[in-house]
Image (tube, rainbow, N blue to C red; front, side, top):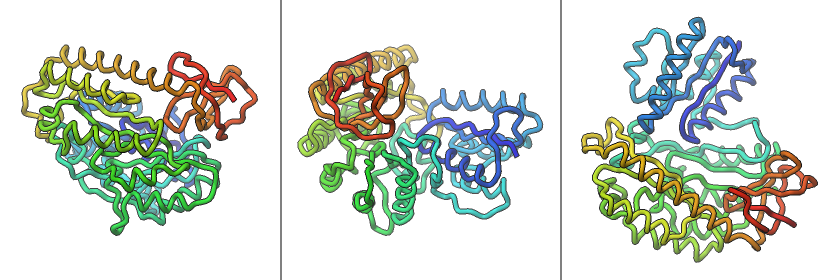
Length: 406
């Protein structure tokens, strides 16, 4: 049977659909975009634009594939479940039902509740979902409505999955989750999980996806000094204004965040620290926005992930008057320019430094790689192996790349 997969949105969504694809291919399904028997759409609705993109794609697929079975899942399918369920042309699975798609299509019974990765599209890096769900109440965020029950993959299952990936040749494993720092398996927390992973022999390194600032304790900072842990943190900041952080219902202020960054830097020299920023939140004055600009500069962050506020149903901020689109667009553009400056400054700071580089691919007689600190590297020497670790010296900057030499 021919099957096609389309996934929108976050890393968790991508992992889930990749796992589903791998298990169905092993069952005999053939991935094919042309006239598939089944089309699986894994949707997103974290922003209004994301929702619009999904709807446009779904309408296109329904029109062009009248005889295909359309399986619709993910966050938009969850948010508007009853509406889509009444559409006789599609089969709907909410996020909590997504793991049942395999059983529905095959007639088998297999537990894919945490979507294990069993084979690899790439042998260099792999992503493992170890946690799902969030029960926070940030006023802008629809995720707790869509993935509202925090749950964590059993530590022993994670260990076995990591061992399998290492045996397949993976050199970097990225742990992912809706709220990774809330990992809890029978009172074993995220640090306990990392401790078990670091006992596994082999030539590999691990990286954390996004972790909330209040969930980065001294114990996590301590264990992150291990040579197998990437010198990298991705920490949602969202705003550099205490007023806006309060309106967002974020459980910290600027002072707490700054102290946390300083704690990390004191223990992990040269660490890369990247932050999420939301611009244009309702009530954000020009002063509040400029406060955020100053704060990210003062922190000397390594880079930003910039988002414009998007009004979402079932959130506390939904009924607050939105800022004009041109204001949000202007602030987003400015903040993205700041991101470029911060990234360039961080790359320049690594010139002359000895860095651990994982080589990822070869192109045009050059080798491309990634440092532990999440800096993209180019090596103008085709003799380097791929999917290998090298300790190299940063020489100069070339656009968004750090040129490295032996």
